[in-house]
Image (tube, rainbow, N blue to C red):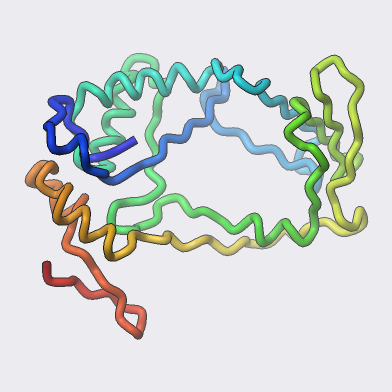
Length: 224
């Protein structure tokens, strides 16, 4: 989705590319929370992980997404804070949608993304033809083993995901990935093309003057 966004849809905006944001939702029915399971280190005993069949996408998060998009189309938004308010106000009675920003326009990180790929890839291997299976089960009594089924009532196929069944990945603090930020040419585009469509108080937040990185790694504001 894009911002700034105006329900009045100013004509020139149609041909431009505003800032983009991704909308991600985890729905835990009954609890309305995100829940994480870990069986390899016996922090949980079992895990059953079913996936929807391809082309079957109607499931609980769609309800929340629908309410957000309806509110988004009716509201002028110029910043990520505006978007968070849209999410919060999209379901005021049920509190179905609870916003959590992962970062800000200036690159400030609010929710870290960790480099799990680098941490886990030396210890695990990918199961063959993983997209052909819909149901996966894990058991703490068999670390690293996944039982995969094409359907819920078919016989499972067993895969050992650990490269060495005797070696589990260490429980350590995984390094956080830095925010990549925007390229200078993208910053310049936003400043010159998109800034006029922001509310006055949001222009310096959403489309500030471009920055360039000096040789010592610091940033300086460019004159435009």
